[in-house]
Length: 264
Length: 313
Ligand SMILES: Cc1cc2nc3c(=O)[nH]c(=O)nc-3n(C[C@H](O)[C@H](O)[C@H](O)COP(=O)(O)OP(=O)(O)OC[C@H]3O[C@@H](n4cnc5c(N)ncnc54)[C@H](O)[C@@H]3O)c2cc1C
Ligand SMILES: Cc1cc2nc3c(=O)[nH]c(=O)nc-3n(C[C@H](O)[C@H](O)[C@H](O)COP(=O)(O)O)c2cc1C
Ligand code: FES
Image (tube, rainbow over all chains, first blue to last red; front, side, top):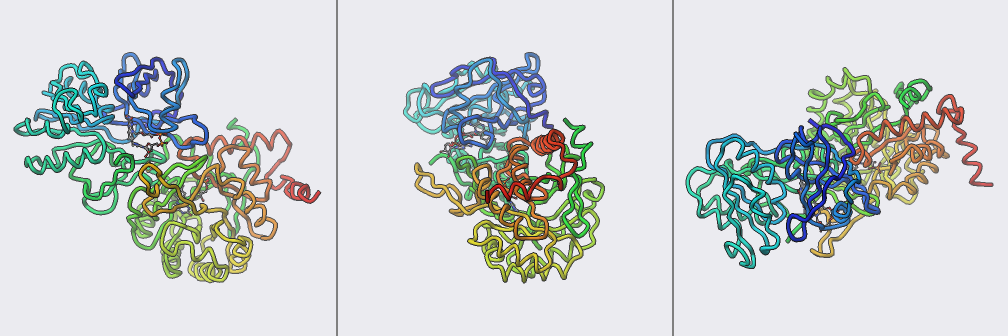
């Protein structure tokens, strides 16, 4: 259920890890309505931009009426958001799309690459609250870009860095190899990382249906009308990230044709 | 401001018995089939124009399909749609219960495709009219009909024979003489024209050294195209006797009024629906407020000739 296109006050701005910004906004209806994994379309006022920018709610707290967004600056829109001072309003449209399915009996493994971690604080909190065993596998270029593990209270956190400055020297997907037994996997990150995750899962005989991913594709509307957010479906045709996702089962995606519009 | 739009006579006629309660419609491809419209006050809409519909379902183009450009956006969706059969069976019965008229936007690769869709929708309850998209830049052949006055007329005539539904022909701006195409479809039996569809354009990702869209080029929409769209409407309104519907970059009441003063009888809002779903209501109320303030009792009272005369002064 979309609550509104509404003005929400920025109540806090901080740097959760190197290069990233965390905006905390006060908007009780959105904080109550949002499910872990859902996103909002944020209006940006940068010159000559027109489209809203999609951002996952990193977490939400219905009691304080606050929710957080964690992002890095990649272009004009994110730069504008990162400079929003406390006390100013940001225009939210949402919550949008489908969140993660959080119920299950198997141990939950969260695999986060780069800024893909932004979606997970609230997800992990919700999994822990359900009494599930949660392991968070965090990958980043370097130690400075890793989210602090205390953002994942109640979960075991393992890290990997591309430069070896912390934890495993290599891909976060490698950390999956240590996991055994039936697993319920939650993944988010750049498309190449997700593709590596799928290859690893095949090698480890983990069915793709036991992996949920949060997809990121370019978006126009976020509400199903522009058909711009297409992702190739395994059953043929295209899925819409904003309608079928962003959180969906990995076996629904045709990973060989999943393009990476942003990285690479 | 709602009371204003409701108190004034802001109805418009598009010919062939199609009357709208107000001059503000949503443009094809920016409102789906009318269902994914949270936060939109449907009662504010003069009509809903659907996504381009073809005889059979189409999967659309491979991603990446959209990109932002300065004050606008590029799209190459490739007419992803469920096909006319699904539209007639699943959607039309729901539309039949709505007060707002639903106009189906029709697309195809050959004249026969348009005729097939028109025939299937003829007499179907819930379908108030057709808008022929002879101007889609994003499919093979999509633009052909709109580029050539003779082909455009041939297509319009063929569809005219296939249906009793009101017929709007949507023109492309990617021509040297849009009026020639407008005149041709008028003579061929179009009840109205809508102008314009998107401008062909492209963007290149310099970091990755490849076009932003997978197809290379796409259609530009949004505020960036408004001045050119307005001029196209200005020309068409002067030369045609059928109604002209103005489209292109409208985001505010004042934008819409510019089109109305240029001679459009109604407007369609497209890209702005993605940013501010509530825009249609705001634009409608803004138009009503302007009319009230300047004592125009209905849209026909807008001094269109006067505006035009000023250009020659
Ligand atoms: C459902 C969803 C949830 C998202 N959640 C988050 C989040 O929690 N945190 C976060 O940091 N980002 C998130 N993103 C990505 C974010 O939307 C983009 O980074 C943002 O739109 C870029 O806007 P911009 O104006 O700064 O950049 P633009 O000027 O639009 O683009 C600048 C550069 O960024 C790249 N870019 C554009 N869109 C994206 C994208 N979607 N992802 C990555 N790179 C992109 C472009 O290719 C370009 O190189 C999410 C995307 C989606 C679809
Ligand atoms: C994503 C997208 C999809 C579109 N799909 C169609 C379509 O299927 N048929 C059509 O006639 N026009 C289509 N259009 C064009 C719009 O209806 C409109 O003519 C154009 O966007 C200019 O108006 P605007 O600047 O208000 O968006 C589409 C536009 C966009 C942005
Ligand atoms: S972003 Fe427009 S349909 Fe998904």
